[in-house]
Length: 464
Image 1 (cartoon, rainbow, N blue to C red):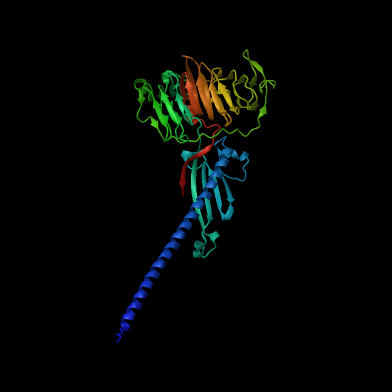
Image 2: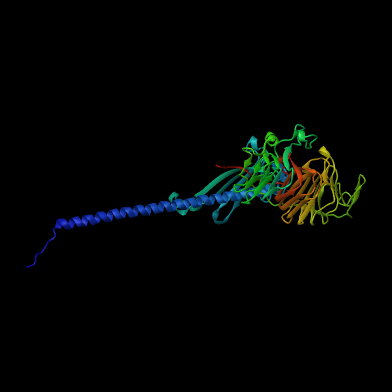
């Protein structure tokens, strides 16, 4: 006998209802997942377009910086109308603008002005507006084509001329004060309160003899040893400072009475660029000792014979390292294409009549000495710029030196002098520094404002 179990219609209906409810829940969950995926996809897409528009905006900023640095001889924008505008349009007063179309519908408009605020008068300000076509779904929602729905971003960049000589001594890597009685301090040639006739006076010295190693070398270290640094020391986050028992770093009172590192006088946030030297865009006249006197030829000045006499301003190039004289009221920019070790250099004049000599060195080695001097006593009037091919600098003198050295690819070696004290007034920027001897470095604080032969860089950034 078989027992048959019959399902009631009511039980079957419950199963069907449960299946429908499960299907509904699954459907709602699936719809929610798909909606969430769509929202996230659109959010990611819009973020990509948003970031892409900033890339275009930054391209406009780079375009403006290139234009600024082609015309950085003067901060007054009204003077630039005589320079090649290269597609830029001059709009009075003191505004330049350019518009550029890029691939895939991207576009930017850039404006340069020096009328942003009283704090930045004669410091050009860049306003860049970059945009890209918006995503198609955004355009469809607005009922227009995607070119009419653009993602736009606007930034304002304040600029300032970069400073090549912000400290007494700077290097990409190690600075090693091996010598005895090494010290640094500062003065200010702009005032007799902190100088005497624009020259260093130990009775008026200041504690601005800062030295720095750059962050780009992770193990860069600064060996003060037994040195006396009246100022600050700077390293990158991974740099180190070493002092021996008699080493001291701090303000004038500290270094006169205490040893060790005064609190607050080591800053480990150094992170700056030392850009390679760029030759000025100019026509360089080739000269030799047989050239006309005054235009680079040989001559006798005040009873002293020179192989190269310059009494006319200009750009000159030589392929030797002979003696040099630069007259008053002239600025000579000299390109030296060989190893450079002149017997002596004289830059004549004082005060407003002082001449200036800027030496650009492409040879592998350069050597300076006591006999290289400027009569004005101002370091800015005698400058040495080492291009990337210049990898070794030496100081051979047994006496004082006044000048500026900027050679970020060169190892700087200072040796000699025996037990004599030697004063080095000015500033240096090199790859590394090694010294043996009794050197006293005096930084002229007026060099912090020296902006010749430098470029504009961003000083502040604001997105509107």
